[in-house]
Structures are given as structure tokens and as C-alpha cells.
Image (tube, rainbow, N blue to C red; front, side, top):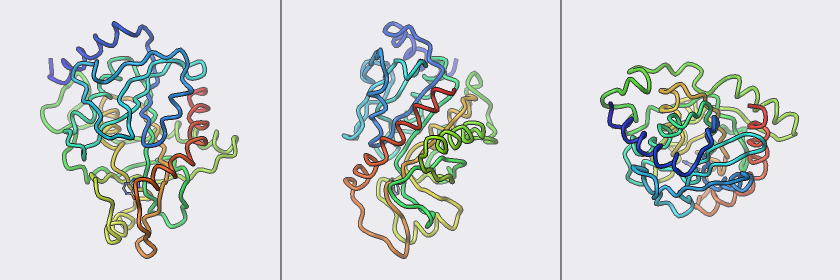
Length: 274
Ligand code: HPA
């Protein structure tokens, strides 16, 4: 048995002692988007520190716990607090919870993040349904090293990486609920510094609409295992190289907070229809 599989099985064993439900929907709650957690009913919460092999979150704005419960009528498992490469974790650590979700029976992963807007037609704050990503700036691919065939193939296909049916469902619901959404390509950068004007320009030229420091590692690992993915970015600031303004974490969090009610509603309606 591969090392990650072995560790993930141990994590699942500990979780199963606490939780009996078998959610098919996994959710990763990103920066400032934690309010969706409050909508989960009949909660059973497990701290990351109580799960074997789970890394422990270091970023203050991210709580570190798995939340099991019902969102509407659906069983879900939500990660409140995720891991970033810039915190010092390896990509295998960053993506370990997604391996665990797979073993728990998750078939669909919903991920959110905060991102800088690169497309000049966007404004901040706003929401962007991710249609594709650029992951080539990952300093280390989470699938690097011996492939664990039990999880997926050596060379996983990235066709339909962000599930087209889920993208269409999100767009349909957004239209019905009168929630304005953009759609576009998310590019991963390792961070933790934000981009220079020249870097924002470069990323735009490469074809990206938004830039951020998360999501892509987890999505690659989810796709490795055949989990369907829907990703939504909160555009918290604009990375316009010719009109750049100073950016603080406070602004990112404030703007994420402004978009939060709409994203929460969108996500809830999406889960209802899965
Ligand atoms: N760049 C990278 N990551 C981000 C940004 C940004 O401008 N905004 C929020 N997360």
C-alpha cells in the first residue's frame, strides 16, 4: 500500500469513530468564506489536530477543522481552514485532506478562494466561476513522486477539470437568483507576496482572469482521483498593472466579507441541486 493511502486510511479510521454519515459532497472554505459553515446543521466538528497525519493550520484567518453535517437536505463535509504551500507545507500535505475526502466517499468537491482580478472587465468584490486553471507555477506538483495507483493514474487527464455541467449549473442558478458572476481562468502562484505590476501583466498575457495562492493543488489531486470539481473565486482586489493600488490583507478580507453572502447563497443553491 502507498504511503499516502496508508496515512489517509488511518485518518479515516479516526474520523469514522466520531462520524457515521457518508457525505458525497466535499467543500473547501477559503479566505473570509467561513460563513457557509454556519449554514451546516446537525454539525459534528473534528479539529485537524485530532486527525492523524492532518497538518495543522497556521494562518490566523483560517480555523482548522472538518465540519460534517447537513447543508439543506444533503450530507456534506467541509474543510474550515485549508493549507497553503507558502505556510511551509509540502504539496502532499496541502492536498492530504482531499485524499481523505475521497476515502470518505466524496464524489464532488466545491472549492472557494480569494483571488486578484486580472481581467480588466472585472471589478472587486465580485464572484468568478472557475472554468479552467494554470497550475504550471506550482513549485512542486502534488502528484510528484511514486504514483499511488489505488488513487489514480500516473498521468491524469485534465480534460473537463472544472466540470462543465457544474459550471453550467452554477451559471444557471446565478442567473435565476440574480447573482452577478464572472467566469474565467484561475492561475496559481505560490505566494506569499502579492504580484508586482509586471507579474500581473505577465499572468494576464498568459491567459488568466484571476490569480491566487490556493485551489490548484487540491483540484489536481481531486482530478487524479476522479472527483468532480466546481471552483468559485471571490475577486477581492484588482491586479491591473497600469492602475495598481496598495493592497493589504485587511482589504482582501473586507472584500471577501462583502461577497460572502452571495457566495454562501450560490453554494447552498448549488448543493441543493447536486
Ligand atoms: N494575488 C494573489 N493572490 C491573491 C490576490 C492577488 O492579487 N488577491 C487575493 N489573493
